[in-house]
Image (cartoon, one colour):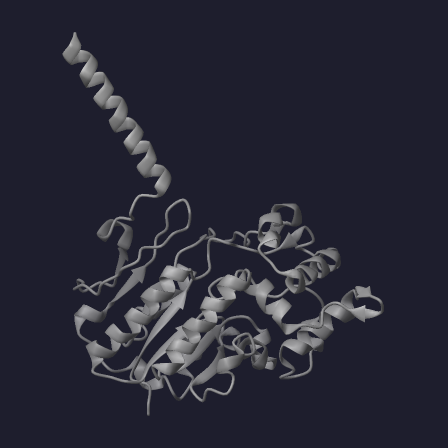
Length: 327
C-alpha cells in the first residue's frame, strides 16, 4: 500500500521548518529540547557532569560509559566528554501524543498508510552522533556488533582477557538513556508497527549510508518489519526533505495540494523539568505555516512543589486575614 501521508519528529526546529514549503502531506513535529544558535556547537557534557546519567544505567551500559570515557581523549575536538543532551529526546508522555497524532492524521486523510518518520540523534537517542574510532572502517551493514568491534579496537578494556564491550544491550541502553527509556521506546515502535504505520528513521548521521542496520538494530523487534527503513540526508546537503523526496515511496507527498488546515507545525515546549504537555490538537491555521506553542494552548499542570508553595501561601494569607479580624 503506498504511503499517503506522514508525520516527522525532530528535536531541531530548523529541520522541521524545512518541510513546511516542501511537503504538504508531511506534518512536522518539533519535540523541544536545547536549540543551538547558528554557528554554535552541540553541547558537550564533561564526564564529571554525566554522573547522574551513569547512575541510571545497569552494569552492561556502565561498561560502555567507562569504555567511551577512556577513549574519548583520542578523538578531538570532543575530548572532554560525549555530546549528551538530556533535554532533547522524546519523553514518555510525548510517546502517547505520537500515537494519538498518527491516528488523527489517518482520520484527516481517510488513509491507513500514514508513515511515522523519526530523526535519530537527540530525538530517539540522547546523543549527537556516535563517538570513537574511524567509522569508515566499520564493515558495511555490520550493525551494532561492527560498532562494538570498532570501540574495542580503539581502546580495549578487558576483564580476565574478555573485552567488556560485547553486549548489544549495553550499547542500546547507553544510547537511549537507561533501561526504562529503552523499554518504552521499544513499546512505542512496536505499537506503531501493530497499527500498520510505516516506520522510517530519517537522519543526517552519515553512518546510516554504510551501516543502516546499526540504526535498525536498536529496535530489534522491528528489524524484519517490511515498513521499517533508514534514509540518510547527508548525500543531499543535509537537507532532509530532499532525501525524503528522492525516495520513491515519498516523492508523491511533495506535490499534492492540501487544505490550509493541515499546513502547520506542532511544537512541544517544556517546563524546567523538561516535561511536555500531554495533549495536542490540530487547529485551523492561516495562509502562512504556523508554529504553535502548545504550552500556551494547554498550560502544564503544576508540579507537586508548585502546589505545596501555593498551599503555603494560602495558609499564610488565611493567618494574616484572621489576625486582621481579631484586631
